[in-house]
Length: 267
View 1 (cartoon, rainbow, N blue to C red):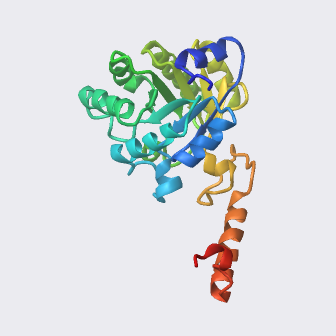
View 2 (view 1 turned 180 degrees about the vertical axis):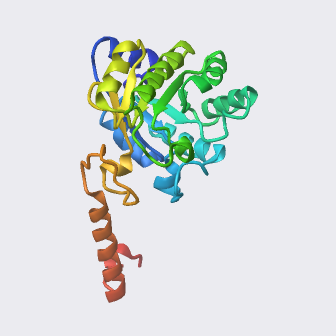
């Protein structure tokens, strides 16, 4: 059996110029399948809210929901590095709660690292969690927990002032001790500039090809989420049509009385 990847493996991939492949997962079956194919990192994202629970955005997601899904995903992984999102209000209120909630995601959720959204203004939270020997992944640019301030899901860093702030945010997150950083919804040129300026790996989502790695939502690349379709998503399979056909065929056979047949029954 292959050994489980650690943060040292992920950082080594950047140093060696090997691209990092990351996907979200929210349950055991998906985690197991992507792990068997050799995914490098798995993110239990608070995107579980809109993708799985049907929320309009990520803000309603709770710690209990994150722990439940993280624990399920952890059971399906044998080699991938597991990161868990810290949901809204789990680290913004005070540093004691930030430490407690990060610890719960590791202790109860079996995560190997936690992810926080924000730049310079969350560096105290990053430092206090890192001081507990818990790896932290940063997240700047389009941060979904900030949609009300941003006025929706908008690309960040298009203007000079925003771009300068994102560069400062990235460097501050690294200086605070983060082991990697997600760059979301950032112009490709700026993301490449940030990547070149950092020692830690960058994981892009809607941030161009020059990041050290890429992350997407598994339901998006399989055509299982029709609530939205971001420009940066590439659909690699149309699983929804396969599922719908299976359900349709099942309904038809039940209605006609052809299922269950003798081979599915007991005598």
